Image (cartoon, rainbow, N blue to C red; front, side, top):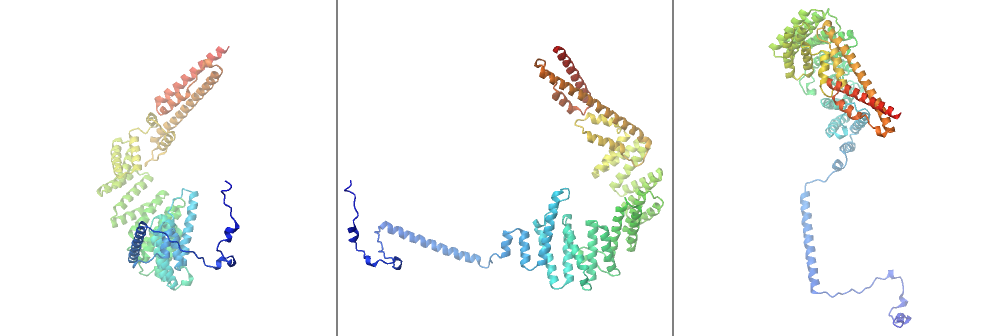
Length: 578
């Protein structure tokens, strides 16, 4: 084995043809290698030819695809930076970046501030969910587009130093948002404030058209009244608009987009509405102020000779006088109101006048005249087929006949009123009419209600008490203390009886619990006398039937029997111990 191993000798290298004298850096010399020549068979030649053919086909197909792409792309522009932003970024971010790149810096800043304000509002609203929610501005493209278009036009007008055009674009944008749902009115408020700032800018005095300023302040006052209910600020703006438009035939139809009267007349009518709203607000706090506001509303209605507005002011004035029980000036104003209604052929207005006339006679204890006024109301409503007023007249007549003890007449009017309210789907009035019918048939006595309700299953005690007190405290149209005195006495008796029943049930329940505890302790000490009181089965089976009177009696008897049985068992066990 050792001899078979080949030994490498120095003579093996010395015999080689390598020239050792030419050892230099191999990087400086090109690599010389003889090309290898492989022997190729016929099969290999065919494969190479097929491969060349396939490559040529692929190249031809690629050329055709390139030509087809060129044809398809002819006339089609490539995506711009704005289009890429639209696809890659959220809509509000791409919109803001586009505005900034286009040079609309004021528009960009205003919309960005609105988005920040909206996000802060939603963050505060999350802490108080009772506040009505509103949509996120940044998630509503239609609102963002409207803001972008309107504000960019206004900014262009400002750059051109066209202040009137700037104000016109801002006002149109504010009108657009004020006509949307109330959840977008906060944006309209911001835009209107920008418009008012432009109008009040001292640097623009003499440059802005007075007509445009007057229209702006009128529209802002209308928005403050109808949307924000800011009556004092609305009054200030509409008075400024009236001062500008006095004696001029300006019209706001073109700006508002609907037919309008002369701007001064519209401003007077708006001031009339503001005074009426202020009167309604002050009615509960200061009667004198409310009366003065109604008089001012009537004055401005007369200034423009608007009979309907004057009648409305007189109607509110009579209502305030009746609420304050100041009866002396009522008849004069009420007669003027009825005359205005006759001139305008206002049937519903006359019906309301008869209702107020009946209330006036009622306060003066003139029941006969009050009934006559209600009959006039009924006849007028039936002639003109006003179902709501007809039902109201029948219900008031039913109340009158109930107080007079005329059950048959009362039932006739109550049934007619109830049928009308069913047709009108007026649930509250239906319930009131049913109560009147129940009074006539003596079904509103508390003991009767107790029996009926306790016979029903699953009676809610809280709802039952609410119903009792509602029946007791109800104030009818004609007061008669003698009629309702027995009902009050029955209510007191019922309350005392219910409290006594509750005390009795609590005492029985406590005794049963004590007996159960004694029996449990005894059963622990003596296993042979184990007889537990299964309160969970007896009491829980009785609770669902607590709503019936018989169920209450059976439950009380069951508790007594259980207590007696447990006391006997306890005595037996105690004697057996000794």
